[in-house]
Image (cartoon, rainbow, N blue to C red):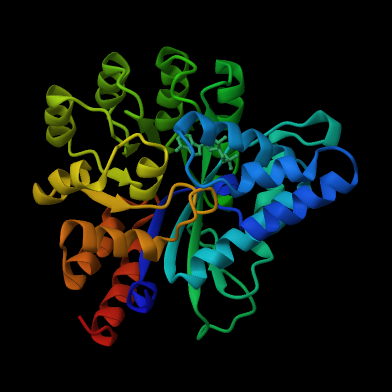
Length: 355
Ligand code: 5GP
C-alpha cells in the first residue's frame, strides 16, 4: 500500500458523514449510550457490520446522523475527515455534505455549515487551502509554506427526501458561501425516493448562478430518470452503475466525467463483482473518470486502497494509475489557479515516484 499512499490523489466524491472514523463513531455511540439515548450494544452491531446492501447502508446513515447532531461533533468530524484524507496524500478534496436543520440542537442549515467551516479551520496536521477569492490568499494555516498542503472545497448535497423548498434553501446557502469554498451542489440520498422533476428546476437555478452540479445517477435501473439526468448535462455524475446500451452511448457522447466508487458499488451490491464493473469499459474508451471513496468510514476503504484495487483488478500499471489521478484535475470544480498548482504537485511527484 505504501506506494499508493505516496501517490498524490484527488478525492471528488466523499460524503462527510460517510467518511467518519469508526473509532469516533463508536466513541459518540458510547456517549449517547451512557446518556440512555441509544442502546450502545445495538449501535455497535450496526456500526461494525461490513456487508450492507444499498438500503442497509442508507439506513446506517440514520444512526450516524443520530450520533452527529450537534455543532461540536460536526466540527470534530470535519477536522478528522480532512486530516485522514491528507494522511492518504489526497492533495485536493471536494467534500460533500447535506446541510441539516435540527431544532432541538438550535441547528439551522447555515449553522450546520458554519460548524463544517470551523472544522476546516481547525485542521492542524496539514496546511489547508479552503477558499480563493479574486484577491484572497487561499491558504489557511500558520504560514509554514513548506508544510504538506491539502486543497479543500465543499459541495452542498440535497437529499432526495427533501422538498423543493428545502433544496432551494440549500442552493441559496451554497451561493452565499461561495467565498468560503463552496463550489457546487450534489443530489444524493436514497435513489428509490423522490423525483428528478422535484429537483431539476432547483439544480438548473444553481447552475445559472454559477454553481457546478454533480448528480448521483444510475444507482438503480430507472432509465427515464437516468436519461433526464444525462440530458441535464451535469458537470459530473457519481456511480453510473445501472445504465443500458443507449444510456452508455449518451454518457460517452456527452463526455460527462464519472466519479467511480469501486468498493462502495461492490459492498452495496449495486455491481456484483469487479470483473463486470463499468470502470474497465470507461477506462478503455478513455472516458473521463475519477476514482473515489464515497463513504470511506462506512465501507472501510481509503483513497489509496481504491487505486490499488483498480490497478490489480483491471491490470493497470502504476504510471497509468498516476495519469488517471492526474487527469482528474480537469474535472475539479475549483478554478484554474488551483488546477495549475495541482499540475505542479503532480509534476514534482512524477520526479520522486518510482514507477
Ligand atoms: P452527509 O451528507 O450527511 O454528510 O453524508 C451522508 C449522506 O450522503 C447520506 O445520508 C446519503 O444521503 C448520502 N449518501 C452517502 N452515500 C451514498 C450513496 O452511495 N448513494 C447515495 N445516493 N447517497 C449516499
